[in-house]
Image (cartoon, rainbow, N blue to C red; front, top):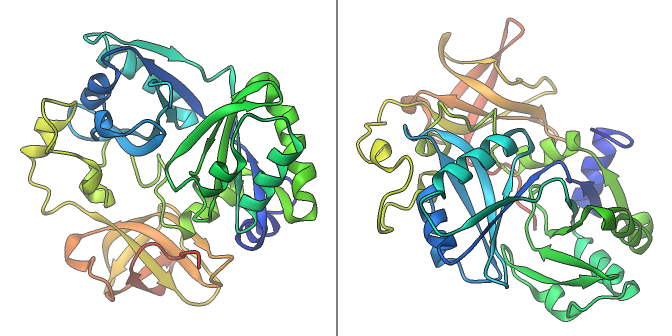
Length: 342
């Protein structure tokens, strides 16, 4: 959860760079001639249209249109697809992909146990990763790594092991996520640590949560779940109704009237007391929603939260309050994300 303190690690990522061990995440490889078509059916997005070397954020939906998981899928340069699942959902996701892909000519392989994931995030992430590659023995073109765009990836070898370098992350900062075989993880961590020196701080999952909340990124189990539909969470754009053919959850969402659903909003307060997950959101004393994630923002210095509220109080600028242990504290509906890097 932490190596030193949550605040120190949070500020390190915002000001310099942090290194995260994210090897608990799940990795599922989809390979075979029908891989793109299988993923088009299994997921809400059109993965067959994603060019090799690019990534796409998408949703794994239930038949009823709820969210089983949100995940990133890489279309690898060799033609395979690598789906990265949230750790708590990795087994469920694997079972779902296996079931949904059974009608297609594909192979579904769980690579979670043999894959390590190390992320470097922050304003100095690029220079640190490039310095590490210079120190190592790599087939990657370092200039290409420097210039690779957001949600794109490169593959090669590093110190004799295969490596996937992706310009992705979950902190609101620039940086990379590097996938290597598990046996290469320690070597990669040491290589990056030496290259980063005092500018690179080991960071745990606690600060990752505060960073992603400032960046307005949803967390499964908080802002996403099987009882939450994409449009409620502001992810209606992720569902591609224009793609040909059926996909799991399509008919349920196309035929659903969600006009009265509670929707996800950002809330900003004053002072030092922050609303937490589960706290009630009030409008003139009447409960109109509930917080899903809330903190005293380390970067902004005031309370922030994401919450599901009734649609008639979801407009930007609406004044509401949060019940914090029996005291109503004023908040305002604000645009997400709370924080954008310069």
